[in-house]
Image (cartoon, rainbow, N blue to C red; front, side, top):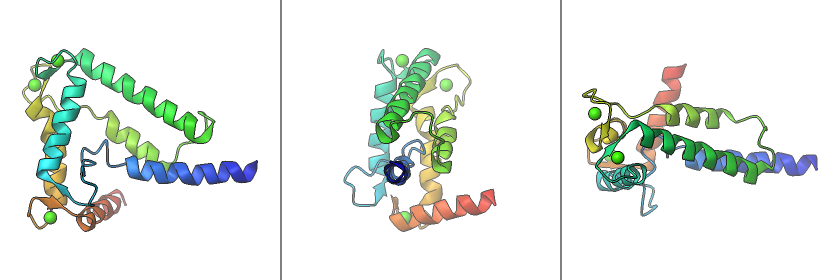
Length: 156
Ligand SMILES: [Ca+2]
Ligand SMILES: [Ca+2]
Ligand SMILES: [Ca+2]
């Protein structure tokens, strides 16, 4: 029984690792070739924006933001249960990182109380540009790994 739990823990770590990129806004490698282009990122953001903008007015209001957050939390709880069969199991450090990243709301740059499509994508594009160190509009696996390392180093 103990062994089973342990193996389950390893698997959930692996899953958390893959899902990690999602909240960072840079998990949009649609063709799964290990490289992320700006086009893929934009398409991914469009899709996510449309999902959150449930009334389709091209803006994300506070209520829509809340709903998206709740949806995310519910999904996470489900996943956790499916994985370990124990929703109260301690989370891995990586998962805590995900939570932090997912918690940060998009920046309402002009302060009008709603998030426009541009405001929605700002952070992800910034992360993309930072990761794309050679500026060719493609973030490769190497560039992603380098970014992860740099972030780790900054944290100390
Ligand atoms: Ca809306
Ligand atoms: Ca705004
Ligand atoms: Ca590049």
